[in-house]
Length: 390
Image 1 (cartoon, rainbow, N blue to C red):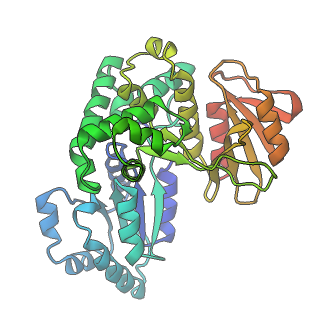
Image 2 (image 1 turned 45 degrees about the vertical axis):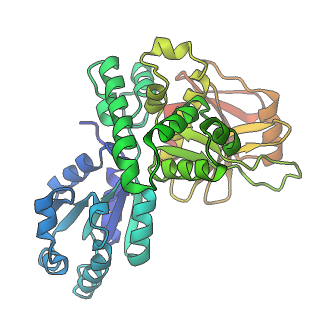
């Protein structure tokens, strides 16, 4: 089993808060991690997709009050959304008896569903932790392992599959399950074929700014519908909308977000790419690498750090700008090559923003200074540096 780096984050959150919401897409490993935590303490695990476990909560307040000395893990919470109101009363009664911490670990597969319902009732009683697929910090520290992670993505079954062929088949099954089951469960009624086409189009346009009008024409749908579909994929934690940085630099800036299919393995499955050889010759290779690096670095961000991109209407651009909670900025350019170099647009953008640090992330392992205060670095090393700021 690959140990997840957020395990310590969850333990700390349970030590300070009554409930912790663990949010991540389906099959990302939330249940496996929760059961690992359960083995380290006297925990009760309830799978709310299981009828017997739901029946145990027929009188939820009575049942949960009787197990207040145990951590209760509630998996697939969307199956019983009415529980949130009960949890508030249970937590408040427990606090009055000195049992106010580490009561519940709540697992959710859709960000909007869990955040909306829990936020309405558990404000001040719950901490949220995002669980992403495997990152470069969690796999073996070799270039071969990181290349496999890039190709297959970080969903555990896909990354650990016996072959690239099996991995691709698993990811195709994953996509089909979302289209046929989860979209209908969490979102408005959307034709599976329409969403499949949109998802594939976003993979082809990986890392480009969102142009809902172009997508709408291709899908023969309204701009409003396309915007709603993209929102749904983002709420299901399958797509990331990276916002532009709004800076007072006296220049006209791009205002639309950049859109990424969050897991690189899903990008490749949607495009029918099954091997590193196929990927190397595909037009999406650079954008796929960029999305992989963006997700790796964003998953390592310390609390309250915010990711953006920067682009002027004249074309000067920084792939990723991290705004830290102390107000400092890091500028990050992403290159697929084994050596690092940057163009004039990056230097001009750095002159606009005056970042505290500037990096070029490349595909190799070497770390060395470049001209004008820019440092070349591998993706794992920079992710580790970001993580150390937590």
